[in-house]
Image (cartoon, one colour):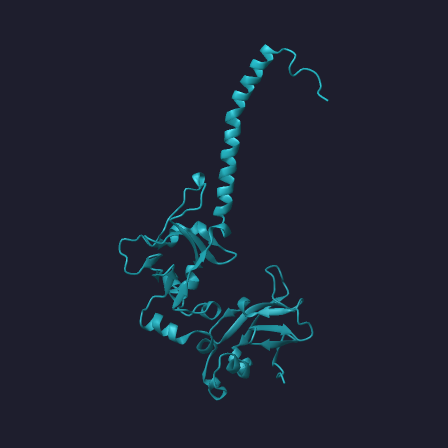
Length: 280
């Protein structure tokens, strides 16, 4: 039998605590959800703006709102957290949400041992070096690497990833000549990898002067990533090539038009009846 999930009362309304989905659901209206991603981590719990009128997350213009603070999930549902993170229940009371939700081995490597996260791009290892603002290739000192500042325009907010043209021989980013691109680049591939804050949230926090644990429960922490190779036909390059070929075609047609007009005028002189009247 499924166990009955615990509830928490927020300003007179009961919400179900679901640690599996990391959300609060109104007991009498389970479409009304307060997700963990919209809560602010304050160390010993979480806060969010709550609408007293709508009984959900308040909008910026909601005057009938109140800042609500809830306890950590290990307090709200210790059984659920023990089950989700495969931790003995008798020891859960000594653990915080941070202990369970964040990879402690990865945290130790990054903070205490100073080991940078890595990304595998087409078989080559890159260090995520936030301080130098780049993905720095391992064992290739001739490579320019991948500088984050140079690939800003390749970032997708929707997917929170970069999708860039990459030279697998030189192990570096290479910009394309989009105005003259009429064929798929044969010496380059398209690779996709997460935004730098996700690649190294601790380095991101340190560089920005924030607490090293900021957002780690929301983002997670990994020591290694695998970049995805994306076929060119699935990228925007495919559309650019199509547009460029169409422009070339239109230009060719326009260049032929003057000659066609000259030929027509010549025919009018030799055959004055040609072109006159309506054709059936």
